[in-house]
Amino acid sequence: MSELGSRSWSTEPAANVAVIYHSRKGTQHALALAAAAGARQAGAAVRLLRIPAIDADSQDLFDDSGRRPPAPTHDDLLWADGIVWGTPTHYGNVSASFKRFIDSTSDLWSRGLLADCAVTGMTSSTSPNGGQEATLLGLYRSMYHWGALVMSADPAAPGWQATGANPFGLSVCASYGKILDVEENAAQETGRRVARLANRTHALRDRIRGHTIRSLRHSRGTRVGVLFQDGDAELAQLAEALAAGVRDAGGEARVRRIPCLAGDAPVRATTAATAGTAATAGTAGTAATVPAEAEALPLADPDDVAWADALAWGAHPAAGSAPPELMRFLQATEAALPVEQYSNKAVTAFGTALDAHSGGESMLLSVYTAMHTWSALIVAPGYTDPVVTVAGGNPYGTLHVARNGLRKDDVLAAARHQGFRLATVTQRIGPAGPPD
Image (cartoon, rainbow, N blue to C red; front, side):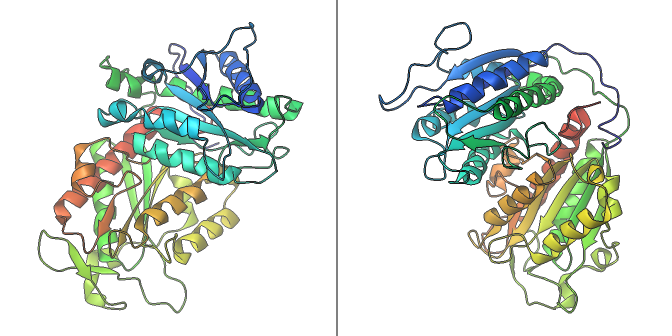
């Protein structure tokens, strides 16, 4: 448990948790009943809500009191501090009924009313694999657009290993309503964890609801490690802007370069063409593209991860994914530190790309995929400030694109907002794991 996670926390009113699911044959219904029970055990006010099926091929399912769970409404989403989502896996994605409900929320999303809700997912399929991981990751892509706070699974939770050790959420084999005891226990723990996390999001959600924001829970400034891939001038500038946003929120930022692989030239992917405009392509190994002050920054070390309450990762895509430099650093960190020193942190990501669709989005998503294995709380920027749209509209993280015609000042402003948001969220709720 990190220092932040072990602090004492103030007592506040119970969280509001909605368990919203689509179930045709009963598996997701059984998991939802268990998750709702777990959330109640953690002191949350709970609404169990079943998404209506598009087709008629669905069982008539009842809650523990013999009533049919009502359908979710937009008022339920505004009420909730946390949501446990449940969907069967359909061709490696959420079901059509589930997706239709998510799509119906665009009016709330466009007004910024869905941000900062604590969410996680549950899914099932007829085989142990069958696309369950892809389904949860696809669900979370929608949640990043909301600006929701996405909770990973906890390897220390009861039943995690027995249910397949999925770092992204709870997944089980479809069983027509008869889930195993270990699966029921895992679903209950999912509900408890979301309730505990949602209890910390009251103040964040109150801001959206127009209520008075309660005071922050601890006094020291949040420590944020801003770690970026070495050799890219624009990444260095984004990192400094994000660090400035952390300091705006009263936090402490530590900016560090992730070293290149041995024998490789730095990325140096982009360089400014004209002042205040988008950058153009650079040439690998052109030293003039990287400012001297960036070159002078210390190299990242696993101890920087252990020091931080939250992490911001900066990278340039390699074949549409996270670069090998970053992945090697993550592996070195895992080898060097006890798991409690790198897990349960709030994280965000930013990057650079040559063109609008040359792998920048998929790279950011792959960073979040890796961070789920660290039990991280994913804090994507979503559309939580108009500057995100002005800077290109990337809800997954600030992305400097060399050939898209955007003003660099706007992109740097988006990065500054992303740092401010990460520090503010972390200071309010701490890491993803429950407090002692």
